[in-house]
Amino acid sequence: MTSLELRQINKSYGAYHALRGIDLAVEEGEFIVMVGPSGCGKSTLLKTIAGLEGITSGQILINGRDVSKAEPGERGIAMVFQSYALYPHMTVAENMGFGLRMAKRPRAEIDAAVTRAAKILRITDQLEKRPKQLSGGQRQRVAIGRAITRSPDVFLFDEPLSNLDAALRTQMRVELSSLHAELGATMVYVTHDQIEAMTMASRIVVLNQGLIEQVGSPLELYRNPDNLFVAGFLGAPRMNFLSVNVDETSGRSVRVSAPGLSPVTVELANPVSLHKGAGLTLGVRPESISVVADGSEAGAIEGHIRLVEHLGRETILYVDAKDVRTVASESGTGNVTVQLSYVAPFKIDQPVTLKLDATELYLFAPDGGRTISSRKAIIDL
Ligand SMILES: Nc1ncnc2c1ncn2[C@@H]1O[C@H](COP(=O)(O)OP(=O)(O)OP(=O)(O)O)[C@@H](O)[C@H]1O
Ligand SMILES: [Mg+2]
Image 1: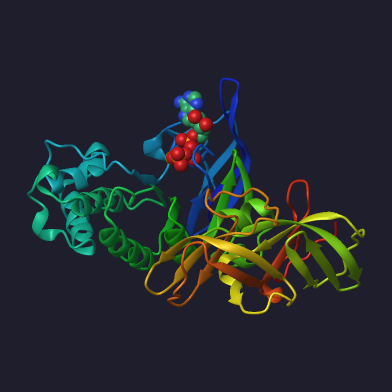
Image 2: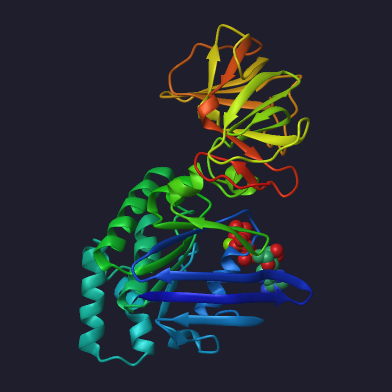
């Protein structure tokens, strides 16, 4: 059953169009993760679902009921913010029962809901404390507990873990995933954290400038991005984008090359009509590049190491390949990023020969960056 449906949601702040025709159907029990650059409209979208912001046009349905104009308290949602927004003068138990007290539920029902939520979140022994006597992680649990006690149809989370330290964040991430499994609840979760998005989501929604770029399972989006934006947004370190030209096309493959890059053939799942000499963007993830001895191989790039990051289980190389033209490069250091899954004794300024894995290449159209060729999805130009 569809738990939450957004139909053509538009939201303007004066002349600024913050949400531009958002369509999304969320099935009951799904864990939807929203990602996108700062300012793309993630919080605005959650707030319109919650009813904290009105919409300019469109419809919001929760369990089939149009709640577009309903008060926040009547929508069957609960929202958890980054700032826990707990009442400092109330105990943990009072904070958690607040929503139900406001709804004038009977005392016994409130107590039962608080007890149950505290048990799920393992804060039963903290119930009489005040928020200031709790750690950040415990406070975040109380905020989540307050949402659970209301048994909402849809949970909304806006970067709930971003104030926590790395270890606690990992722990809470795992706890939230099991909470989701336990409650079977529908959740919409906003985060900037790639690992949270990849590990928690049933489906990820990538937003950009108030528009949905793509919706899909984490691996679908990672392996078959619809366009250059999604390809560049998911994955850290980010995908490399090189400016290339078509040398030759033969039915199911296209050979591309560029200054500083020896010709490499990209296999296509479907034939694409491309002109010889056409300019395209070649995408290659940092983990699909290796360091080799022989520069005469296909897809080879010569460069110098600008920076090495030894992360223990992996090594990241930022390489300056001076002849290679990159597109939408972000890293201020070097223009090709390489991720090696081993400890490599590389040093700054060392010359290296890189080789792109020809089976892991992406091609994007020049304007708009639509994907021409990815792991599976192929679109004709
Ligand atoms: N009350 C408001 N008045 C005018 N503009 C607003 C208002 N609230 C948000 N905006 C604008 O709408 C856009 C989307 O804001 P929003 O808070 O949804 O971004 P976000 O995706 O949550 O970003 P972040 O990742 O930084 O939290 C921004 O450009 C912001 O400046
Ligand atoms: Mg936000």
